[in-house]
Length: 430
Ligand code: S3P
Image (cartoon, rainbow, N blue to C red; front, side):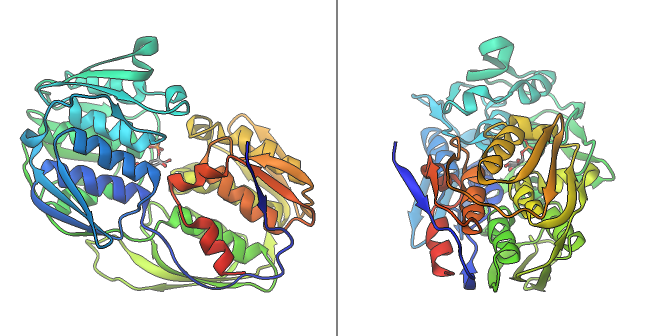
């Protein structure tokens, strides 16, 4: 296996980078473009492997999708324009693709089969298949519908009321896709507010969705109309450079074009609580659109914090890099209420704790999170692994930057799932 020799002992990171498109919004732009009528032009689409898997799945469903001059153009023909695929739909590593597409396929009058990589094969699917069954969906899989391969026997769905047992935007979104094509009304009750890109996009495509305190309702039988989408930069990708700027000495990084949707910006609140030195310059003010801005982050003197409760869904994907940040903060940082980390691309409690320990961090796993003692000098002198998880790979590359000894990274290629030019951006700041 080829190992990547990570840059260590960086004395500063300075300059400006433009953050690549948001993964969640990129997936949804293809899905909505496909089920809407007309031509949807998507600008700043994330050409990462996960989003390319979504494009390939919809091509197999008969949707014409072009990639031209940095834009993606989806020629939608409405829900009825989707056709029975003659081949398996391969979602690769993408949990968002497989979970959201089930909400679409379960209401289409044809058969389809979903398969992904070895990480997807371990990720729980009954969180989507069970509520969809209440809508009348018929989805089978290994272990009573828990694991891939999944087969979907699509049919006319009926709207339902469903209370989510876990806060999950993927489950909510799958049910909204089902509800859009069902007979009658659908209401989803969320234990905590999760990312609302799907709700925003229903409106952008001319649909109606009612968002109340703790619940979301939509009427079935809606038809959507194509629109142009601008995908803001992914705050989950920006997070690696936000933390890099704060923990690497003599640094000042200007992150351009970062999505600042409040359902995603928990890391900003955590960095504030830890005393990080940064400024936010909002660049859009249109309240109906996804908010966007620039962030300038500088080397900071940090203090520990507690990360728990309702903030967790607002920063769930940033916990690996927040754990690294905490190793450089004075005091003990506690992350709790984050059991969901166990069912991400890897068990992120275990992978974060085990890999950061190899570099010299004082970090322990708990049943629902981790405890990190700072401030610790990370040493390195070890081989670490992404375990095939893009966010673990990027976190380790930033961790290596503050190590004194050599660090080698196994499975570097996982990073292209969400940030293909991550190392180019990192090098441009050196
Ligand atoms: C996502 C929702 C989150 C997140 C994932 C993307 C989405 O997953 O971790 O990376 O695009 O809806 P859950 O819904 O499982 O929390």
